[in-house]
Image 1: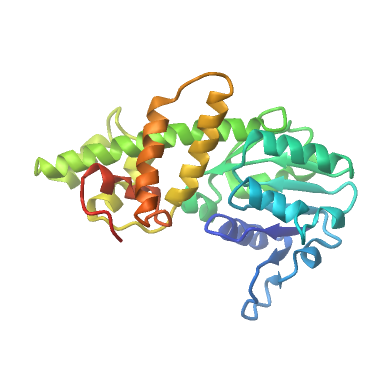
Image 2 (image 1 turned 180 degrees about the vertical axis):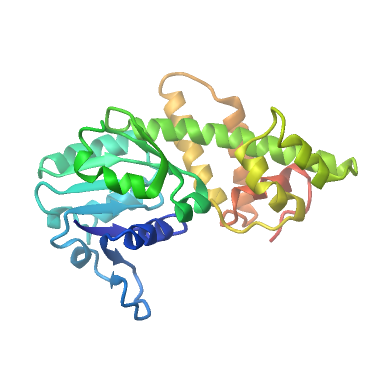
Length: 287
């Protein structure tokens, strides 16, 4: 099976590397030329990258980016083979996934939304959670791709359903990150032995992925990239818009979105979402 991969960012690049390491033939699209690497095939033209491929994998930032990859000025949709497939690992709006699915179906190309969760660690380790907007039967011909990338592979029968589940995931992420940030900053102000406190909290009901994986970053105020704050802000916007469409308010998610907006205005959008604690602690908001 010959595949193309477009979107070699913090999540997409390690995903593509795992596929190559597991024997998949991948054409990699990158805007800029790469150093010679005999194990990888880079293309600076996306159309060339997808030519004669059985499937296209996409992992880009938002609705507009996916639209551009497929249907933009140098879009690849018209060059995809009939009976091929597109797996979209991007987090986009459910309506965008539905629209793309319909457009590609007219060319006899199967599009499936498959947003992921688990950060850069999960992408490197193959332990991502995959939220698939299709049935297992529909994905049978390429389900092995999911097994290489994810530890938790979840099928939700219907295009756009994967994006809806990812929206719920990001609401939970917002609340847990903010709660961990508040707790850590309060503990520091109380001059508690925070390393010991965090060890104790990890054992009880308060444990969470952010506490396990980002509490140290908050303690020392260093934020190596796992998931960009600005991307989570975009994801929260999708979730809040989805809730508004059925007349539901999300007060906690909305408040975290406001905090993220303040941090982005201060130039911190490219940092990991764990930088949330800087706002809560009332520190100077700076790099």
